[in-house]
Length: 409
Image 1: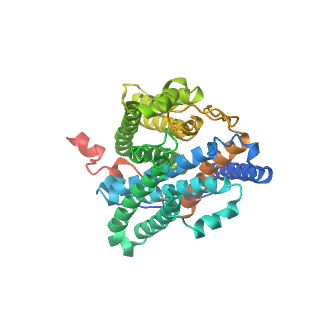
Image 2: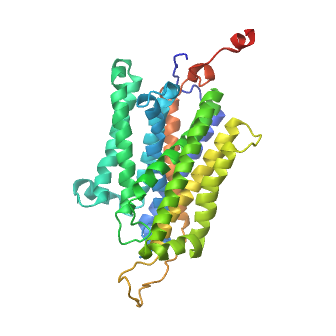
């Protein structure tokens, strides 16, 4: 296996200008959406007293969870000694940091008063998992920055393994903290589960690898760099395992809730009678995000290994958004059980299923998180040496043999 040579993307072609212009336009639309919500108030959104976390939170949580998983590609090389992934370690760190920044930007702009972030950063309630997550998110960015520095500075190369271990452990803790936001909310029957943490860890592996595969494919295609069959096949196997893990933990979570009498109501709502939430669960989360990519990855379909990976990765992203939507919006839509075992009636929608329809400002702000992440990645590979010159089999396959040698035998 040859040594990788990293080069920034050279030149400013029409495609490069179009990419930056497209991301920039979407970011501007996101800022306009944030300004509209801040100027007019949250009544212009679909959120209300029952649904306090809306569509922007779905995009934000997806991006944060995917950020944790994107760094796993670098961990495969630094922590687990899988040398074929070493050429991708730099890009993995960049994508992880960009996704986290994009997710956090959506959360900050959705506050309505972004300046209130100063209060959150200076006043802490350590009984709240939200306070701990501030440290986890900021710390994750710092760890990635050091990790990338060690990889790109040859004098610090001997510390890369240590930084890789720190990044790997930190990302597990970060994803556990994100899942625990929901797992610790005992008031919501759909959230109250210790399985939220391992479920979110499995989701991070799947979402992160899917997003990274799409970014890698676009970056290499746009810069004229090749990707060998060896790395495509590795990604295909890994993605299939991660998708199966998400389906497994999701199934265990719902089966566990069905076993507990107090959760049967919310499970019936999500799985059978929840309307759009039920449709998103079976068609989006299970169908598009689980069954379809597994079929694309393993069924005997003549579409080529690269197309299998790209289409399945796109399906995982769409299904992942549906998955997070069902968790966040579906979990809030089911009425709170204020007095268990008692019937509650009042004029404040007690006992009624909450309705929610996202508005265009919410959609614009959520998509803006992806655009911010894309803009950071595009600027990174354009200005710095994050992308290897080649990801062909001669670079990534430790058992690569030139075609001439194979033909001679």
